[in-house]
Image (cartoon, rainbow, N blue to C red; front, side, top):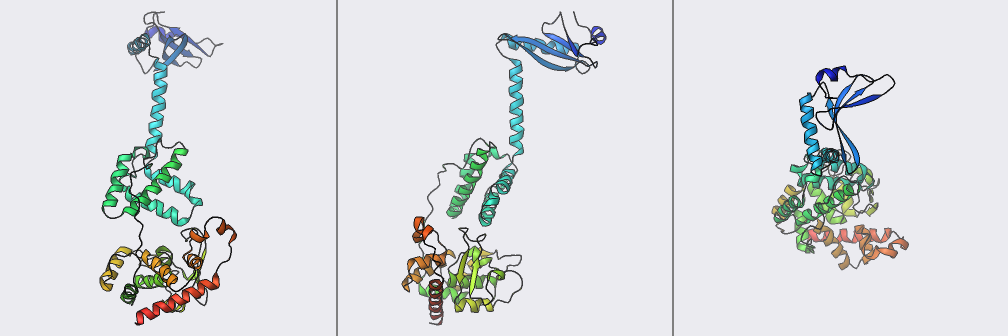
Length: 389
């Protein structure tokens, strides 16, 4: 039948059938499907490698007969050139879906999924720091598709951090990014990891140990009011980590202020840690009047103005080229000078490597509580002697 508008209008599906196909005598491969409900749609039918294919073209009410013939003519032309139009359409549809899924997974969405689905079981401090570092470094990419963050973008951003003197932070950020994208790759969310095998220089191991004179100068420059000053002095006396001391809570201290228990959720290695407090440390705590949950609060929540406060401390003390973490190494070195055994020092620092690593850590369960208390008491007396000198 040569299809015309009038003939298409008159087509009806027999009551006993779900639908019928009527083909055009003018354009080979053009057909009309008529359903029992009265619907009529154009379609193209062709044979490719011995298999019949059909492609719907649209409703007869939406497409003119002339355009339907043109569409079928183009399809038959592709078939003559060895192209399977149906397969091409399926491929294009699949690619469109993949692009839509890729565009929907922004870097921000990937980081949020990583936090809620994977990092929820990890240490709270690691989860917070990893998200903060990646969002800060890649803040201009957060709303872009995660799959569009390429290796050259990552290298450029991390190189800029290293050139600003933040090489260690660049290395940590690279490690966080590699972990996040590795997790996403395993889930099939991204095709590649732009953080893998980056050309980063190895981190420089610091070995700065402050002299007794420098330690005394820093202590004297820290005397006076202010959370940062008390944090620095507590760092000197206990040798604990900056973030652990900075977020110290009154609830973590014993009633008599003789011990401080750092919960596993705040300890870097995820292991709860009991720190005996020397007499100078207890005096420092008694001088800090409680004004909330935190011992050393900042203006809003935990203290956060580290860089500015440290620069001011350097100016007052005259000590240069040191970091707060060097106080931890300085105390550890000082304990060795005082004759404290290495395993006791490592217990004080809450290290799980060194003498506590491997099989020794499994079977050595002694907590060295008395040895730690004696060592920190001796260190406290040593510090007192320095600042009175």
